[in-house]
Amino acid sequence: MKNLVKFTTVVAFMFATAAGMAREPKLNLLSAGKAKSVVLTMDASSKGVQVMLKDAELNLIYSETMSEGRFSKKLNLKDLTDGIYYLSADDNVKNYSYTIVLKNNTVNMVDAAEDIKPFFRKTNNMIYMNYLNLDKSKLSIKIFDAESRTVFTQEVTEEMIVEKAFNFTDAFPGTYTVTVKSEGKTYTEDFVVN
Image 1 (cartoon, rainbow, N blue to C red):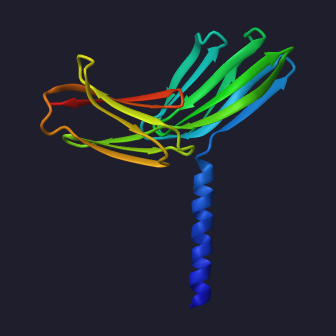
Image 2 (image 1 turned 90 degrees about the vertical axis):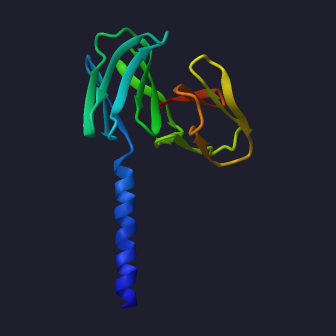
Image 3 (image 1 turned 60 degrees about the horizontal axis):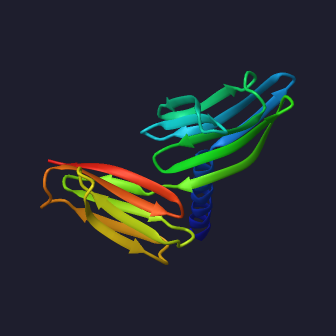
């Protein structure tokens, strides 16, 4: 019986690890001859994944929203001039960004970053926010109404897991914006009260 429990636990752990690894994005760089391209492979959440390619001046070159499920997107870079480009894949939970350098018919990835975004869950007159603040940096949470008036503000420091619930039961009807700022990054979520 003990062996069966151990075996079941090991199999469950292996399955959970494999499932978690399957969701990590994979970026392949191809530079054979004049065929300069990148292939981004990842799983799209139920809300999809926004894939964007920008140049060094942050001009949008390509944008597409991938639907739910596993996808591979090949971006042909052969017509682009040598320089720095930014590829990002933004889903509901994380933003993956890659810095790509084109030089002399070769493609190189010089930087990759993963940004965990706050998770918002909306119910009738409530917004629940969860944010994994791994570096425990200072966090600013503000709520604005439709006329940009501040209706709530709070500073959070030294917390790794930030959980908040906002009750809009007695709020005036309209659109409200929850803003979360941390280390130069800003996240927003809109909420309509009827």
